[in-house]
Length: 215
Image 1 (cartoon, rainbow, N blue to C red):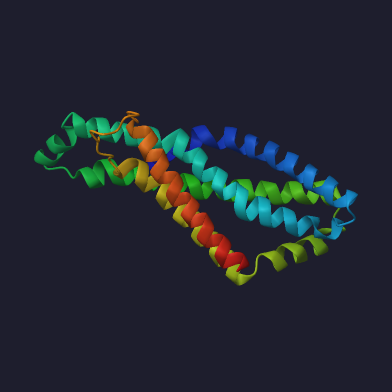
Image 2: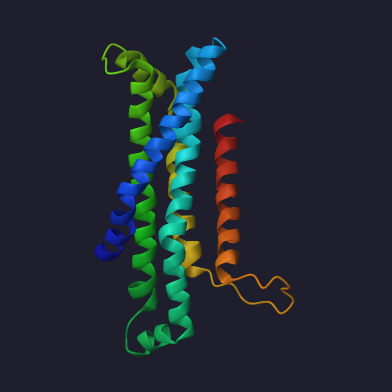
């Protein structure tokens, strides 16, 4: 399990952290400049926290981990199944669910949660620095604005959405095995079918979380 967790997080941590920081900084500058131009600067912090931290970053993390780790791992599992390695492991007294599937699923869940936490913290820090600079006088107002957004209900929905994202990203690509269809004129590969199923589930989770936050 530790080896799979390291493989799922360590190679992605530095690159995704830098990428998320760059994208967050660009979005922050755009939102701050736009709200200032329209005289709505008092809403900039809440808008940034709600759009960037609550919505965009968890979704980006889920798709990033899916493409970089869980989908390649799912392809390995499907190849092992086709070659009969899982049946051979079961016949030898092993447990494919415990020895093959569980470590990969657990590593995917851990990677999504860790990267989401790191990227959200970085986005909050960059938001403060972009608005107040390297000065401590704005900390009280900033923490109050963050606290107003992260109410108990919103925090619960945010945590549940991240967990469900991590479960979907980890379970579907690794466990789901699309069956070939004779009438499939496009000849869609297994990866495309898995990605379509995963994207549908992620959109459903996102829609439910939006209803919970804003309905």
